[in-house]
Amino acid sequence: MIRVDCQGVAPEAAAASEEIRAAIACFVKHGYAILDHVVPAEKIHALQQEFEQDYGRSLKREEDDMSKEVGDARFMIPLRLAKGFADTAIFANPYVVAVVHAVLEQTAILEAYGAVVSFPGAKAQPNHHDGPHLFGAEISALLPAHALTFALPLVEMNESHGTTTLLPGSHRWRRAGEDVEGITPTVPTGSCMLWDFRLVHSGTANRSTVQRPMLYGTYSRPWYRDPVNFRGKRRMRRVDFDAGFLETLPEDARRLISHAA
Ligand SMILES: O=C(O)CCC(=O)C(=O)O
Image (cartoon, rainbow, N blue to C red):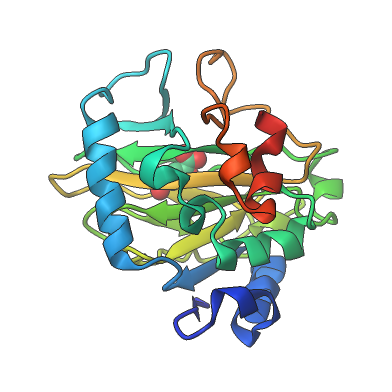
């Protein structure tokens, strides 16, 4: 398993750093990147409390208009770009955006923003990719990435709370089920994972007694819209923010979400 430690890499120098270059190379070859120390752990702790307060009570163990079941006792909900979730260190994180720009080009957008929460006792998800192949598996395997998932745990992802198993190289599979050993990383708070939308992966079981919220962002090329995860969910906004929010943002962050204004 390859991990890249961003501690000591200045955010403004991220794109030119050896560390981010290594992350990009891993992403292109293996379909994933794991970045450590991209957000201070205290900031994540505050976000986790905010999540519990603002979303915890309304999130039930059943699908409704504002959530989607994505596995046994596992739900996806949209997050509003407000308060801590509107922090550019989170949705426009400089280390993450440096990888996003390299693999999806500078015109990349944040296509969706939310959380996947697994409840205590949630069983492992089946293997899947986040979207269907473009033009079928044979052609898709040859193409550069069109979208990726950014996963930022609000509590440590580990054997007890559950994490995500990734099948390295599966973004290049021409047929399903090639034989490869998965990796099941522990992801501490402040670290994140990125995976190619084509990569085969699955959330592992939550064996603990606490919810495991994982903030996610879908970054994509500007023409791409996730055709699956919002099907039948008209009330679920992909990227949601107040009028006037855009004007408060630096240019780079604004470019990521202005399509949703
Ligand atoms: O819960 C996880 O760890 C992964 C979730 C996931 O892959 C999904 O819902 O598509």
